[in-house]
Length: 72
Length: 297
Figure (cartoon, rainbow over the protein chains, first blue to last red):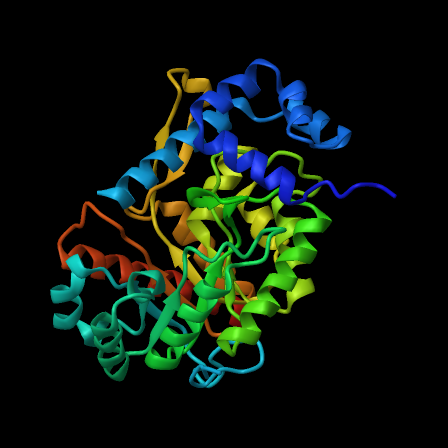
């Protein structure tokens, strides 16, 4: 049976690279390997190799600003 | 179980048959809103701001006695393969019970996963899995709050990875699977269209007009990473809605059979109240233009 393309493990991985700059840097240096080491399945790892890198950095900055605003 | 005043099965106030234009409630705008209630048809209140404030909830209840109020959530994270936290849904239920808004709504976003708080609205991968999970989450919310939320399309700066549907298809399928109505944020639609290469009017044309009952309008600004080729439109709610948003509103009004409730959202850098009221009038003009075109068709 084909694994679902989206599942809690994938969302957790995305949340991690959205909020954790070190995790994001490791991921961008080796997307497939980092995704695989997080337990994501082959299809998800392949999809994450093609991630929108510009958008990832912009979104991460935007999320960081929102978290900072909430703390203020 | 809380009951939403005048709500039908889809959680939509069905008795009002005319278009309305209103404003998002912000403490900084309170004096101006109270001074101009006769020019504001409806007020949208961010629900999360009042989850833990009994006095705030009482104030919103008082406001709801003077003008129609709709509640809008930001932290439930319903577009996720994880179920929403029951305690958050119970807080929403309590607030709905107290305020008795016309409707309540939430974003089609995930905001946390595996215990990691993202801090804002993130677009889930657009897949069949997230459609089914979102529909299940919306029905969980309905069971606890007492009515199905309306759901809002979000702006995203990143094309959601691991997606196999585009946004219009994912939205349409999610509405179909859940039966929920859409709060169509036209600036989010516009920004995502610009950022990811879809024509805004084509995006709008692919959405089911019968399921659109509320509309958000707002503005944003361009951002880049130092390379202008990479610039993207950020939905920041700090600027006036750009002209194309009003064009989209007219276009929507020309094809939507439902009365529309349009809310202008402004989260900072507040201009004088007269400026905001002028934007509400622009929205009324756009609605009238669209309705005239619909009548003439």
